[in-house]
Amino acid sequence: MIQVQPGRHAGLIKSDEEIEQMRVAGHELARVRERLSEMVHPGVSTWDLDRVARESIERIGAVPAFLGYHGYPATICSSINEEVVHGIPSKNRILADGDLISIDVGLVLGGFFSDTALTLPVGRVAPEVEHLIAVTRRALDVGIEAARAGRRLGDVSSAIQEYVEGENLSVVREYTGHGIGRQMHEEPKIPNFGEAGKGLRLRPGMVLALEPMVNLGVWNTEVMPDGWTVVTADRKPSAHFEHTISLTRDGVEILTE
Ligand code: MF3
Ligand code: CO
Ligand code: CO
View 1: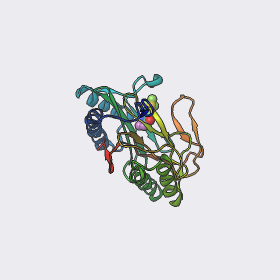
View 2: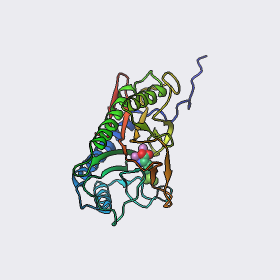
View 3: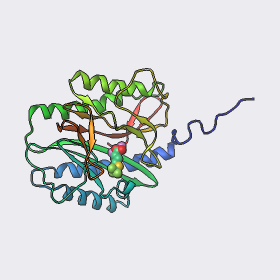
View 4: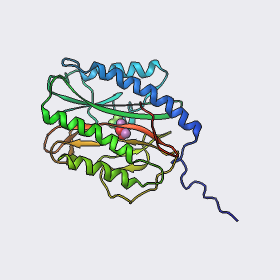
């Protein structure tokens, strides 16, 4: 008798119908991300960004994914300079020339989550900050290129780590990418460091949020007294890019594009 193995990858593998719904959610989220990107200029507050994010998400009949998540109080995470992730929008945080800002935004549409982030310079930034942003953006592409059915999770993790460290920057260890679907954070965890050839075998139908977080100085982080804002231990700048992707038989599809 042939023994089927139900549930072995339950939830990890999405059906074509589920992926179609996640494609719709991802495309809508990408539009929200683009709208927020256009707002990034000196003088704009992170509160303004958050308000527009919430309005845009609600207008399309979707729900902000972060609002209320473990008590998180906003629609986006806005992380400036030494802030790595989970910065809370505030009327008092006004973008200034020379800052860099990471915007992370997520929504739920038709029962499925989508999650994306990017980092932008505000006005003119130092050359080392431009390099940090460019390498982090490229690190996401490197991860996406390594994410192929048949390969392993460690191939993705190590590709990102080797590229970033080859550029003399460091990858954050305490926070990872993740599977995504009917929950924002599903198995597997996807570290941005690791060993090639190790870990879970990747399969068609997996939907993953890849999200390299890259620091100019040391990789170590701390959490601020607000309980959310993650900062670099040496207070040097950090960048973050994230896409929700699905693995197909012969490649990947970036859902948040
Ligand atoms: N979007 C984050 C991630 O990429 C999670 C944010 S949770 C929040 O996984 F509560 F901080 F918003
Ligand atoms: Co995110
Ligand atoms: Co994520």
